[in-house]
Image 1 (tube, rainbow, N blue to C red):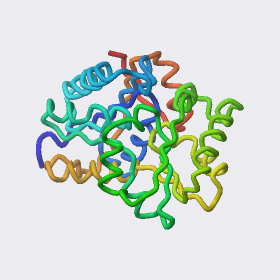
Image 2: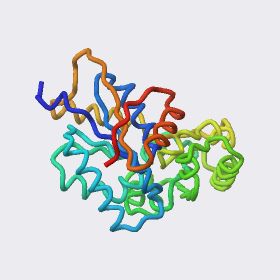
Image 3: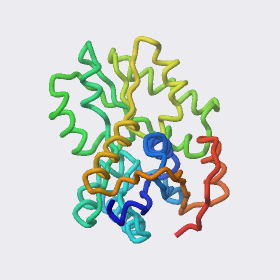
Length: 265
């Protein structure tokens, strides 16, 4: 086994939405240790400029690589679709991205009509256009921007009248294009699945990528001989650029689990 196998895995998101990815990794790879970086002081990323976004994602990825970690998961669609190529070009460890699962949606859509719910930056990215061309060129794909929705999750407002109103509005707009698959292109939205599914109805299938990302991470660790195979249980440490007590409270509310809290950087 490679000596790097005992190193942790870095997981990074603009805020707490990527916890959905971290939890999936914990389920698939229970022996691995994770360091989760929530960039809550600078969330949301959906309204940030190109240069700022690339520089910020690269800065935090470099911070994680220096811990060190054996791999990094960008658990953020906006960060991935806008900056992953730069990160991969500058780091010599596996970097796993999170991007809209258009290929999976195309496989599941019987009517060849899907709707992608995401931030404006993700929707406007070249990567989404490339994914559509590669996997869904015969699809009728509606791009549904959801301004403010990730912000509500970041504040922990999962079931407030304002959040329910946003979900009702955005899902209804998406449904006006008659999709049979609704693709969640922001990790924050994963925590709103019960309400999104309620508004969408049972005939519309919801798809999100967390389990596919965990499996891809496992494949990359296996390929680099850094997959941890011993029976010791892993763990998860939380690092935040924002207020630690607030981030800790939100993390526990979303995951209902204990977290090791580290100092911000």
